[in-house]
Length: 330
Length: 71
Image 1 (cartoon, rainbow over the protein chains, first blue to last red):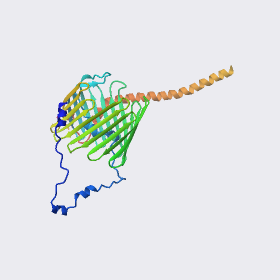
Image 2: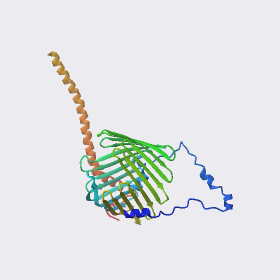
Image 3: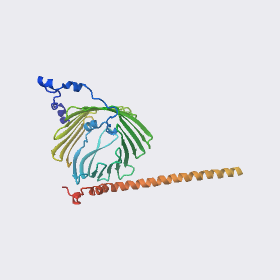
Image 4: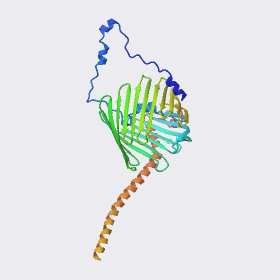
């Protein structure tokens, strides 16, 4: 995509100067030298490690930068707040949606729908519901049963029989660990556990069992993060290896890269992207090893009014998707 | 002859006890499936109205016209 490539080629904004300005001799004698403070490492309190990120969000920085919600067509979202906690949302979408097909050609079906949603956000209870014109309901419930135990319910209900899905999650948060139990329809049972090993490193594991297909799997994940970078790795018995690395180059710019290998289908994908968070806009772009270039721009026109542009160009499949839209409301 | 008749009698008694357990398990399954179907229909139609009712009763109470007007 021309715009994303040209943006990548443009020089990045100048980084803030990291070194302190040279001080005069008098000041240097009076103040304690700064180098000593930086050289001495902070003491690690091994009994008070921080609580780790939840297991499903272990790659969230990479996903935020590399997988924006690209769309094709027109999108208009209007969110109206009636209350601090209660709001209604109306959303219109007109465009093509991709239908998975057996051949390598992409099959696009023109669709248009209106979606009505209601949100109730309380510190202890969160209810989010969205209903579409074809009768599908997306429901999300998050409830804090106690300080450490949280219950989440996620459901997609349709009018067609046997196509509905639902999942219950129970999360328990400890001082330096988190554990989660998942129960879903089609007899899906899963659990995961993540533990902080050091202030920067956390390791986790997950296990799942599908009842109807008698499939089970186990996976391991690791996450290392400092103030400026996040590196994660995930290995699963389904034959998937996923690595990601995100570097925060400055306050406004971060770069991300991602590598995924599927052993069963011998599929390798790697992508590299950038995320510019500027005062009036947020621009994300990525380049893929499948020949896909994508860019996503959110521009703030006014207080509460955002203009969105989305572009995805797949050179290998010759599939070009462009979308535009507006979001009104917080 | 007598042993055959007694054997047949024992088989029938064995089948009878098994079928009552199977029947109760089937009943529980049928009831739970019926309950899940009803719960799905109730959730499908009632979830969004439930959120709206909870929201309209939360503090500070919004007015009814605010539900429909775009301002």
